[in-house]
Length: 171
Image (tube, rainbow, N blue to C red; front, side, top):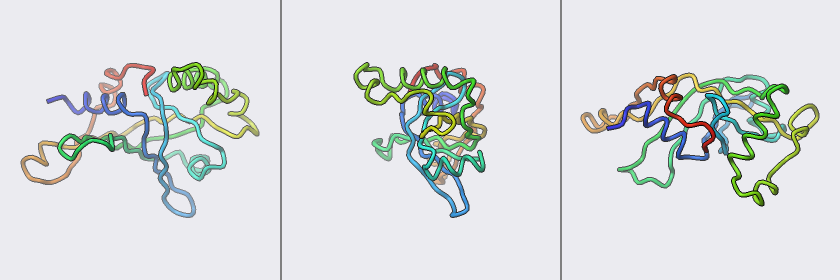
């Protein structure tokens, strides 16, 4: 059976969407987010500045995520849950992240051209922001606990080892 780190790396690599949980003065909020891996050991996505989760992240970077294949059967399902910090990409790193995100996420030139937003729209008074999601505590399903005790638990993942197994530039 693959290690927790191998399973977590596969979950990050094989999926394109995560559920992002934030909290603001109105309470908790969760949003489906399209992400890419890298260019460093983190996940990147962009959102409109006016989005509820973007406003929440401007006040507090603490967040949580879940990544899983919603099409998998109950016998095949695996999932990753993590907490971490989600911050706006600083202006001096924006060009690299902007280029990486659109090249990785939209491999077709036609599709990329349709989705591409100018880099200057991600700073200042722009409509969007790129975010860097750094995963700090990562967990996957504990299949042994389910098999032996029929109790749904999680097992911790070594983040350094997991990132070593994740190839850069994937969804």
